[in-house]
Image 1 (spheres, one colour):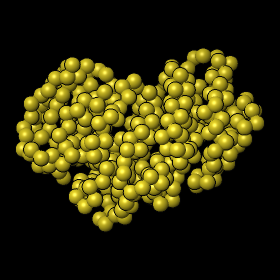
Image 2 (image 1 turned 60 degrees about the vertical axis):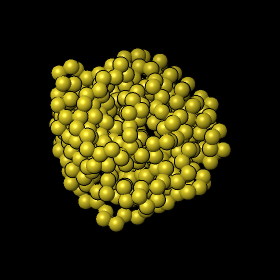
Image 3 (image 1 turned 45 degrees about the vertical axis):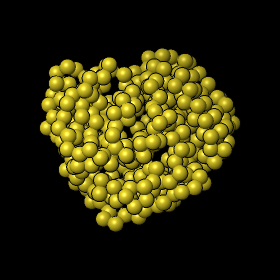
Length: 366
């Protein structure tokens, strides 16, 4: 059940709908999120807040906050997860383009100016900016320097789209590397043409790496894309995120997502993103390791954890991945050497060495 709260409305022809799922977020962070949009975008931008079943006291406060802003709409649903919340936001959106924004993150000062300029010039299916990971978030907007005249890359054929997707999946392409940010796999920091979502809503079953599969399918529908080499989105890294937490069903999720990404990626992209898929599957073994095998909350025996990791490495999709993957893009010499050693132990079935090596790698890189 979705309940709408009324809000003041100024504009009728919306260019962009900003969709923000929230769940018991602090008022300070929600204010920061909304303010980062409102101080630079007014009449042709709406903000859609989807409250995913927060505590009632918090929900009452969220309604009041939304009523303070023009064209800011509040909806409340029973707790169903961020994917369902995003889907509800898409259904309610009136804008020609959609931007997703997480409630504890925010956008930079030039984001809308640069993005709408690109939209008005090219009318692409998707506009992508760069994300900056803030490891020292203090709950306030940091006004960072943004390029005034950023480089723009226009993509309009399948081959270029495949190169971009390979980069997003982890097989880096030099022209998309940017010193002040990165292109993430998630749905944030990009403006999507509304029609792309007609048959591409988010999977309502929560899984890690769910955005990977969604990206593979959605980008296949894009005919034109523009990459803007400018920092648009601040990803505020906070302790206790779902990526860092313990997941009891992590192995089942690993098997599902790696098999799905491998099969769907190969079939709908005709093999053109296989190296990116290999990088994604390779990365999944470390998510499994952090979220389950070597997680401090895992009380199972060494034997059980060892067998889980061994089964994951021996899976068909992972064996296919290590045959394809290379680490030419890894600029840190220590990391590259460690990855090459791990790859060797996996290919030669030295699984105990693999187990100890991944444990060491996860400990050093976490």
